[in-house]
Length: 165
Image (cartoon, rainbow, N blue to C red; front, side, top):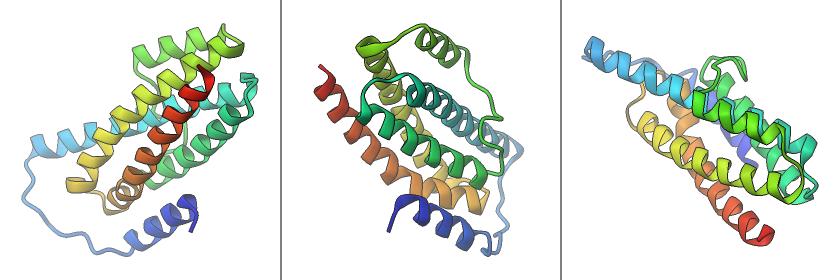
């Protein structure tokens, strides 16, 4: 089964889950809200840079990865209850996007891939944490599905980096 369909199915199933009352403190709830926001911001970075890669990369393998990434980040954002691209980006991510906008060719591909590797490592950490203790059952289900997808993406990115070298 395709990961996007699996993500959609997990999201649909989790929406029927009965929320379980927990004794979370306000600080824990705020930390989880920040974790959710971090996941969305990291996803927006992946989405925006992938949109740029879809348009600017000369490498069909990079463009194909970018389209896959865009589809998955849009699905995750929706599962987290947000519009794709609405969370914004951190300053360091915005700086990378700005530098990418000025690049073309192999230099662009190398920087895009490096940014995706770094971003996917961050997203892996965030989604693992949210999958284990996130309070929103739909977002938690999306994180559970996202973890192996992110691991797969890191493998693909490693292959792309090797092929581009």
